[in-house]
Image 1: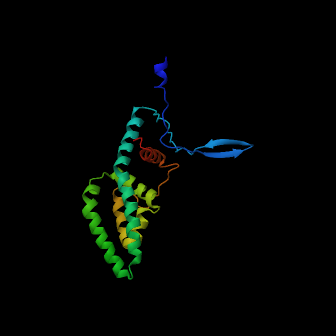
Image 2: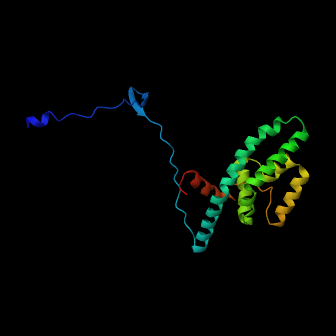
Image 3: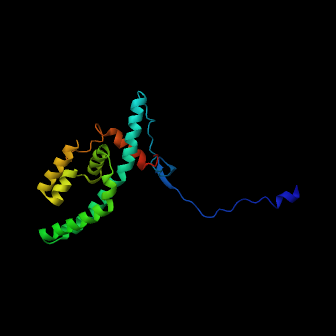
Length: 185
């Protein structure tokens, strides 16, 4: 019994941890901000066909979402330099230079997208930038080029003027993106 007394020592704390506190009605209560934890309902499907359709959509969104994020990032990066150009001629020259760089870097990958993946990308670019693809082309390349590319898109069943609607039309895409951002997919 005496021999065990010498070995009974508690752990020494490495550091002190202080919590914020809220005082009210004479009481002091500890207060700690917790990170938000997203909770998503498990997708329920009417039948096997709708389940397959959902998972195909999920696969397409996962494929094109990084391109939409990159587009928003590059738009912010290039916008400052574009607006800093002193003349319209310098702006056009800058746009051509950037366009060539982007086509060289991303062109082969984007050409491999299916029509439905392109449609999703158009919507996600609107989601990420706040501008439709048509508006972006019109601002950077002019109305004639925007009209031309809108015509090309219409031939393939797409619409560059299509806006992202996370509440009604694009609700499933929005849910998939939120799950991607939460690290669940």
